[in-house]
Length: 281
Image (cartoon, rainbow, N blue to C red; front, side, top):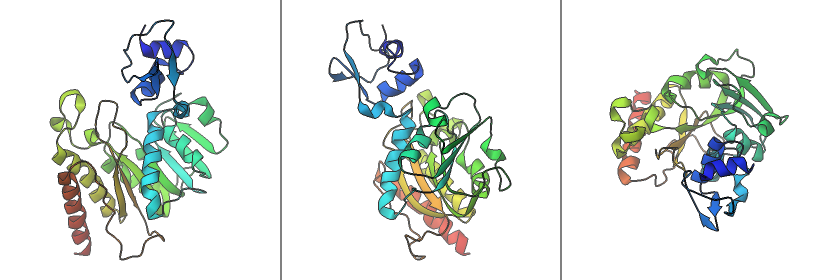
């Protein structure tokens, strides 16, 4: 029997897709050894254990937790904030936000019936299904949030940034996950839809940063996601937003972590510098 099927049948995972997320995240051990292939064969007598961190409803929860940790030294503390979770899906981002003490999360997704019941039932969560984030505006219910987080697929962040910025209050912050495979165009995708070029990944991030700067947002931080996408795509988080008390007006340059290769850092730096010059013209 496949490992993912065994987890679902034993009630450890909500479904086979949930089981696959647990397995790929490294949370599952078979007879004491970590296994990351959902197709791994097990028997009825096989001892299967799941890490305590498997309490998270999706891998996305781990990703946002890592991004919040990366931004914390720069002063980002989400406790007490009202938040828009754009592309909430099963609720991984929302779950992490709740654990970090936010006051309320408006979780929106274009799909239906995806959010884990335990997350949707939390009184601090309002789940709205069948909502296209491009339709959000300052007049939409729940507008005026302090923070926007986004985990969107099959659309470029550059296309949704105006709506997200309009929905948030003036001076709000955004922590957005950049998925290069949805930013670079189909012609630049490799086998399995993976962006393998360092230059293309850098261009994807730089394009989102340029779009944010065009809206008057300040780039605060760029961090590589601790976990890749489901097909191995490298993903990034960008923190952009309005004026931020934790930093002086002169500190416009983001803190640059080691993303992957020096080429990526250099390319993104060049784009931010260039967009900054354009703003001053």
